[in-house]
Image 1 (tube, rainbow, N blue to C red):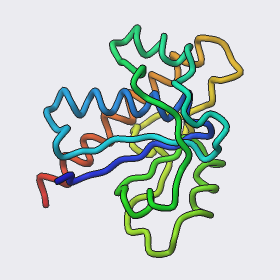
Image 2: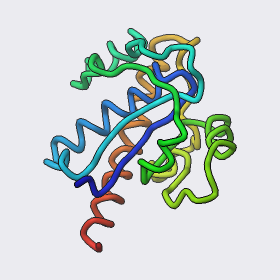
Image 3: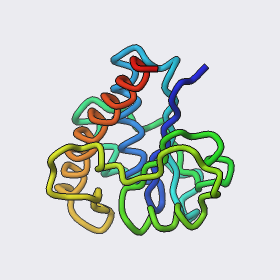
Length: 161
């Protein structure tokens, strides 16, 4: 049985949230926690449903040893609020959209992903889609920091519980 379920959310689920999905899933696997931590990602919009991550995001992730190729975009669904303990948005706009969709009964944590990154100047993972390749590397830098913080929190909660 999964003890923690994590959902990463951005706009189209082809850049930021699949990057977070791939990085975090890799960290979970390295710690031997795949049996207790479930990882998924989605978008608030449905334009890219069924598509693989952006080629630039996949290429940058590959440089650091992350494989995004199995991932396919999907859109948030109302059942996600029943299934996931952590629903983490990449930016304020997507967080606001998620709050609009979130039922009052949701008992998990709905927050910005970078709230787990510690002392970083940014509060949002910037959308690299219309920028250059450096934007994808920066997204990975932020995602790696926040993923480490999130895994530490989940591990601490598992130890305490």
